[in-house]
Amino acid sequence: MRNIFALWKKELSLFFVSPIAYVVLTIFLLLTGFFFRSIVVRVVEFSIQEMIQAQQFGGPPPARDYAQDVLRAFFGVLSTMILFLMPMLTMGVFADEKRRGTIELLLTSPVTHWQIILGKFLASVTFYMVMLLPTGVYALFAYRYSEPKFMWRPVLSGYLGILLLGTVLISIGIFISSLTENQIIAAVTTFAVFIILWVIDFAAQGTGVISEAMQYLSVLNHYDDFAKGVIDTKSLVFYGSLILLGLFLTSTSVESLRWRE
Amino acid sequence: MIQVEHLTKRYGNTLAINDVTFDVKKGEILGFLGPNGAGKTTTMRILSGFIPATDGKARVSGYDVFEQPLEVKRRIGYLPENPPLYQELSVDSFLTFVAQIRGVKSEQISDRLEAVKEQCGLEDMGSRLIKYLSKGYRQRVALAQALIHDPDVLILDEPTVGLDPKQIIEVRELIKRLAGEHTIILSSHILPEVSMTCQRVVIINNGRVVATDTPENLKTTLAGSNQVQIEFRGDMDGVRRALASLGHLKSVRPESTSANAAVLRVEVEPGFDERADMARAVVQSGADLLELKTTGPSLEDIFLKLTTEESGIEA
Image (tube, rainbow over all chains, first blue to last red; front, side, top):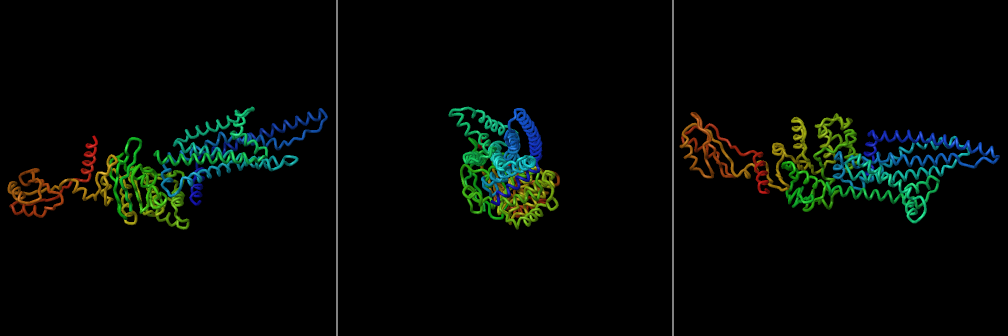
């Protein structure tokens, strides 16, 4: 436990001294801010239109939860954004360690592979949480100006969903990073794999056995449930097993590193 | 302290090291000498637990490197050939991190930090970022990293490579000071370094151990014989006759003669010291003895001889 903590702390301090981390953070917050604003503007325009239509035709104003619409669209944007940014966060996790030769330091210290992997994994997740935290401001903003006040449950489950989705990407990204000592190769490969994960979601449209299987395999499909406020055990198990798969593959890769060197 | 038995490492069809056997006693500095690509780094990586061996056994402080790797790693301080440093960290935070993963107790970390910084001459460098340090200082940080948990065994892979002469001398002095408390294996392809710092030398070439001995013994036993050079003034034939009556001499041949001095080169059988008898013989023959000295081959010669002979067999 102490070793994991030491590795976690080192990894985080390396994150926060590297320019990449700040580039990722800045791009992420700029884009989320921009998209949040345009979503709000669009939903407001849409609601005004609906109200005018209702007045013209003399019906009651539509019973819609506009704040909820904003947040659901916003969670959709978040998931696309981390698809692009996560490879930059995980590319160096092992690749950089190999390039510097510090992997030799870690592997000749009295720590196990699992401690090294978990320390690095938890540090990446921590950084990701730090990245997500400021977006909470938008939810608070939506809460402050929405009338009637919306419910917090879908917001919290949405964050749980985005956290799990991101953690899946982190565990896959760390595995890919452990296969090479070139950060660029790691980033490009990770990005390609993520794209495939997203494409599966398109294949899941429609009916039939294959689309149903694809629906279960789609990382985004499960994510939608969370954004709607539904915490499904099936989705938790799905994300959990993907995270574990990534970690196990990493462990195998780190072990085989010793045999290949 | 360290026993290595029949260690073999195979990469595909190439043997990086082949049947390497040696041992190191407690407090000893063992030099690991060989040309580049001889298998020094491979052997050290196996000992430090970084890579597994294909065959053979290695034990450190009684623990098997393959079966109890964590116990071994706790007792080893390893300095790889390329210093493994996190450039963006400060010296203090880097050493603190290494102390933590090497299992130094939290309350002892600051004491250990001060101790290794003093040992390695890094007292004023604590808050500096490693990337702003000179190469010599980085090497010291890498050495401090290997010492931080006060290990029984130090494995140093080419510790002076890439340093300037002044830094090389400093690092060598530091290594000598560390002996006694620590058992040290030091690899090098520079002969004077090994003969200056080490009590015993293992010469390795093409993955095989070709000789193991003290630097002094290597000189005598491996040279086949020792040579003595005698400079005198007087009758050459008289002196040669006088020397011929002595035992244990393999050959006597004149090196140079001039009007006021002559030089003879005498080859003595290994393991005998005939200098006193030779001096007496020269003087008794009526010549004036000007100088008498042993001119053993340097370790350089042995090294060259060993490695070229070895590759001669291979070819």
